[in-house]
Length: 257
Image 1 (spheres, rainbow, N blue to C red):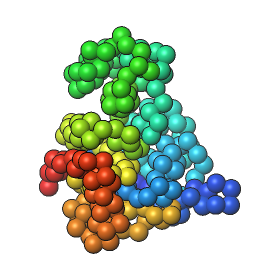
Image 2: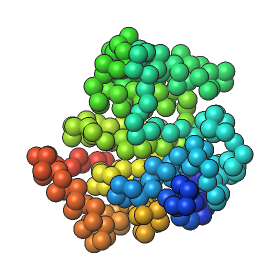
Image 3: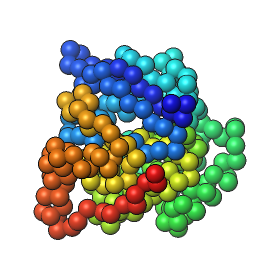
Image 4: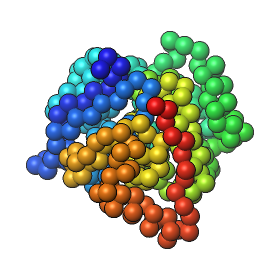
């Protein structure tokens, strides 16, 4: 287990007397994509927020062998833990370039921000074309690309993505998941929270099923995708939803063994 980058043990988060996450334990290995799937209200976003230090939680969160309990959000970012939130939280009145530069603020003293910016533009040519455009005028897919690019400006070791496909057209969803796969190939570990279970399991190496704040199932993504309960509850729903929209789920590149 020496290649485990993130280790979460018995994590619990409560809103008053209501426990949203109960004794959840997950792990993300170096260079792997791990997904957490589940219905709305399962506690997926709360789990990411607790790992990021955005809310108090009990249990243990270790990153690269270090206990993060005493570290602030900014210190966790400096260690290499970065969250792309569901709402993306861009600065709408600022340009694409300025949003990206702000993403590199936490690590600007320890590396070449200009080179990192060019690397992001190389990965997202559409952002390069729109570098002077206000973030608030971008399309939904472009805003998601900008949110990803801004996160990459901090050169993360672990990238946590909260519902990256939310509200996007099927073609853009395919592009976003292809980008996620290329990030793994470049060595970035990814913790992916997704309601699009089919796409998430296709791109991930390992998966967890979270329901009402508790883990119900876990295993290699291929095994979860073949599990009858997962297929009936999540993959079947995804298929039905896609049929209603008149499209099919994106086909993702399988992870290397």
